[in-house]
Image (cartoon, rainbow, N blue to C red; front, side, top):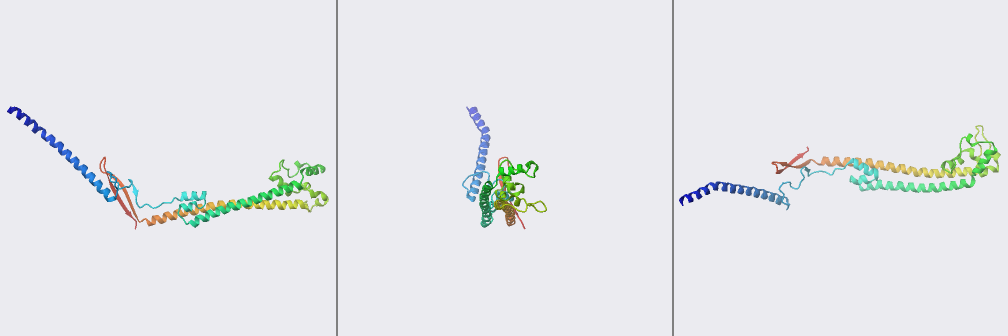
Amino acid sequence: MKKVLLSIMAVALLSMPAVAYDMENSQIELEIQSLRSGGTEYVNAFTGDDKVDDDFSFGFDQEEDIYEYDFKSPRKAFVYSLIVPGWGQRYTKSSVLKSLLFLGIEAGMWMGYFDYHNEGGKLEDEFQDYANTYWDEDTYRTWLADNNLDEEDLTHQLPDSKSQQYYEMIGKYDQFRAGWEEYWNDPDYYEQEDSLGNLINITADRDDYEDQRRDANDKLDQANNFIIYAMLNHLLSAFDSALAAKRHNKKESEAMWLSVNTEMKKYSATESIPIIRLSYRF
């Protein structure tokens, strides 16, 4: 019996260090967990963050400047205003009046274009109707045949269709004088030439026609000028906004005398601690 009891006691004594060691390790692990949890809760309580987070990141990204100024890209500003004048100025936070100025000029240029283009188009229709009434192609070709003239041998050949060139040629060049109605009232009078071979007299209907065509072309040319002015407004607004972006960035960077950056530094395979870097400019 004594031998049995001694055996049981020996086995118990041998197993106690291992049990104590396991208990000791478990206790240490619990203490570590408590410290980590308590540290995290303290940090979260200090920062006002209710979320439990073991990485101690303080709410920042791994590399984040918490004093970063609002950078404006000059390239973006240029493209924005190149598309819509005034858009780049709004992007760079320039004066609202400047944005409205460029946008207002743009609107004014297009209004001017459509106004002059429509008016020029109406005058163009009017002088073409006038030519169709007082100039006759068949009469002109009969005159060529009566004078044994071949148009292919002359300076200009009339287009087959009534194009812009057609209406320009019948009024501009003396070759087509016989097609005008008034010419046949006194052909000898309208055939008189100066010493250089140029006609001295021009029929009233042809002269009136040329005035009408000139007025229409002037209106259409002015309409095209508005397109040129609009393009210049785009370029001016684009360069102004790019310069405004550079001024903005320079002003902001000069004012940023203090820079604070944070990053997470690993101190083990699974744990990181926050590192804060301060830099300032004299």
